[in-house]
Image 1 (cartoon, rainbow, N blue to C red):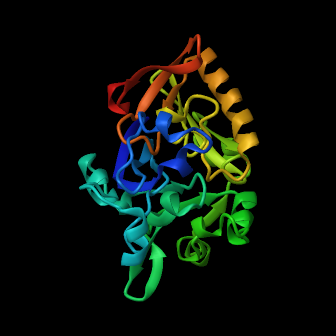
Image 2 (cartoon, rainbow, N blue to C red; image 1 turned 120 degrees about the vertical axis):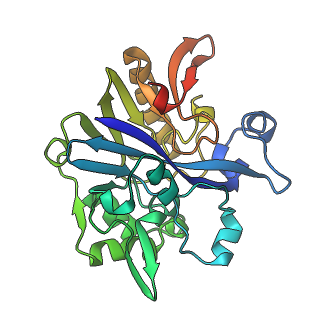
Length: 278
């Protein structure tokens, strides 16, 4: 097995929304905001090479949306998914599986591209994986969350015939990949847990979007069920600390991975490093 970090660019989100009840005077030291109160975040995916399978976890937001849309989110940087795959000797046609942690636009937007007027899978040879509970949630969204669930990112996956739902992760993926579910950020978000080179690596998706979100009260305003997120953070952080897991961050603009330590203030980051350094 080999793991690769796949960078698909950077975007901006409101700092207050990203840090919830934490005051700006505190979070601004972690990820300084611009004059519009916007902070920069990564769109970092994970590529898992295992025997004859090449599994991509999340896809970034892609580039098919309108100029008005990108005016809200400021997609920028030199990275994109094609370039990042090519660095490691791959192309989009090589991907056999696309595992979507959840269907918010910044995680699945790159799953679908425009060819003329048609919306088609970006990874033509891949099976796309979600789960039934989250798919139902995303395709019948509530008013608060529906701006994150864009039909053009989601419905063409099913229409292509390439969509499958994960029922038991041991049946669908190699045995060194476990799919865990959490319910605070959105209903039934999936977190891949990978055994690699003697380490357990946990892809944090939006349970912990960045290392700055490790302290328990740092819960996003975007989370549908923040009290559930708080409980899930306590559980996962305690487990990760006890077992020396490596946390992989999807949105931290600087830090790819870290380990944890117990301090007088609670669980905090111990060491930070790139995935390639393992």
